[in-house]
Length: 256
Image 1 (cartoon, rainbow, N blue to C red):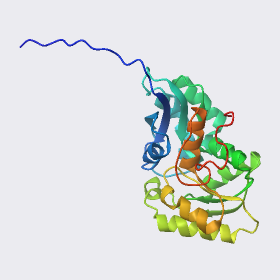
Image 2 (image 1 turned 30 degrees about the vertical axis):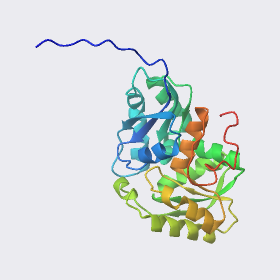
Image 3 (image 1 turned 30 degrees about the horizontal axis):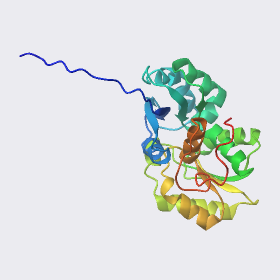
């Protein structure tokens, strides 16, 4: 049998691209970011090994795999930014170390994660006091609160679902998130200016609008702030529910 050779041409246009490193155990962030990022921004995804249980030790262990995970992006890709999809992991490892490890594996001008993205979003919206809702046990969440405090963001009230197994986080119902977020804001001993739903595996998107209506506050989530920041670093805008993504801040000031 004779094969037939067909000539071909190559497309000169390359879409803008960003990369996302997703935890092995995360079932939520990839589909969320595909909804939140603009359609003209191409999302490429790599995965990183992660523990079944969320502890300071399992979070810190991801540091050892970060460069190898970043190196799995296509060598021909031109990634305007790379996001690491773990809020508590970033707080444990440190944003600067996350960026350094990722840049060893992939050539990209910008690296972000939910912690740096949250700090940037709070600056954009003028927020300094947040109610913090997390799925995780206190030792995991306390590190995040310390990192935020060091950045000038207080969390005077904290609530948790006390989940240790990552697989259970994605199963937490929308109704549970809505009720907990609403009650947490109401229980705060100090006036808060916003609510943060921590964890990229938490299915927060369906309740963001209802929570903003119930609390009268901006509601931020790990995946919305990360999408917002990645798009901003790539010179475009994310879209979706919540005051941040509706553009209450200008969202296009010089990235940083």
